Length: 138
Image 1 (cartoon, rainbow, N blue to C red):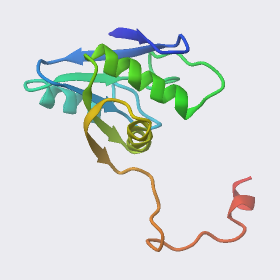
Image 2 (image 1 turned 90 degrees about the vertical axis):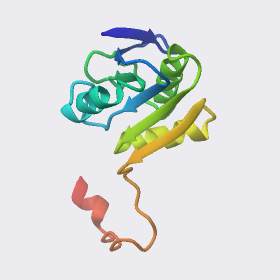
Image 3 (image 1 turned 60 degrees about the horizontal axis):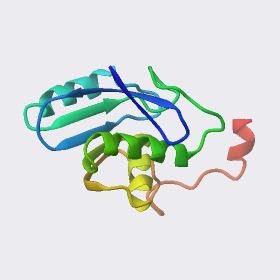
């Protein structure tokens, strides 16, 4: 395990394996870098890539700083990209895919993106939520 320090001083834990162009794996909200889907993918990619598999802030061995903000997670990814040499391929899963898109929109140096099941609803693709949906959540 290694760490980088994000812009706000938070330590972000990661594993690095392989050689070649850098690729960063961005897990979903309920995962950390020890999840089999991430470790197996890192192992499969490592013969051709330098794979950075990290714990998003507040998960696994990474620190956390209140209040939460997507901007902080983008800064975490920026620190990892700098650690990788200044640019990287990025592969995001679930909410990690949404984070990857936000980071790309902010201008981070990403060569290409791979996105798996970002949690977005496309207009007209599903039934509308009931009007009292929020009430049922409380």
